Image (cartoon, rainbow, N blue to C red; front, side, top):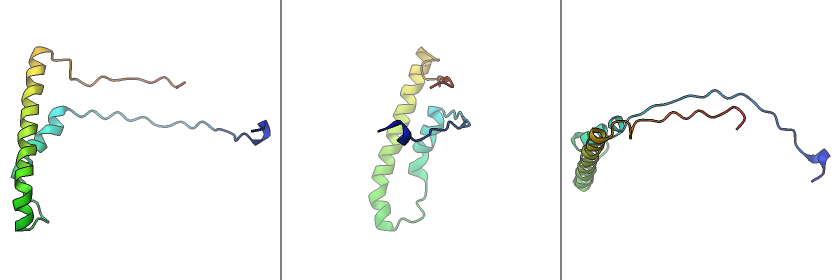
Length: 89
């Protein structure tokens, strides 16, 4: 491609947002999911969904327990690490 055909690149500033979500904030709703009512589910759908929702709840509960055990051993290991990018990247 010749130089006269190279498109001009314009850098624009983009605002950066940091979002911090803990594992507990993710897992707690999953633990409680088996207790939720599914508004669009019929009786047959609920019968099919119940074992899956219960399994999801059980797995999330186990994961919360493992996270708790890790936090007892090394409290900082699972905390969010803020990474700052340079403006030249």
